[in-house]
Image 1 (tube, rainbow, N blue to C red):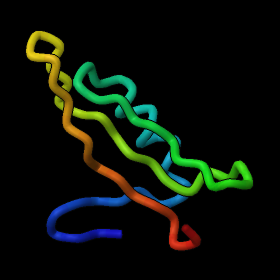
Image 2 (cartoon, one colour; image 1 turned 180 degrees about the horizontal axis):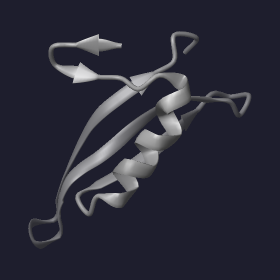
Image 3 (cartoon, helix red, strand yellow; image 1 turned 180 degrees about the vertical axis):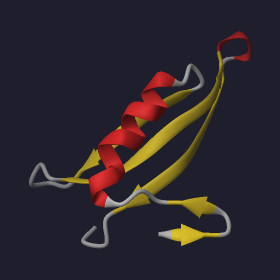
Amino acid sequence: MEAWYTSVPSPEGMRAEIERRLSLATMCPLIVFDTGGRVVGMTTYMNTDAANQRVEIGSTCYAASA
């Protein structure tokens, strides 16, 4: 999905996006599972600031089925 404020990866592009975020020192992507164990989305801790013990929660996306 494309919107002026964000970009949501396609299901096929999700793995690459998670790997990209894992490679960034300031991001920690988390996978969201449904109760049946299916992956239905992703959220991200971002702009981690250890010195000030601060983190932002953002960049959350879910599959249409969720």
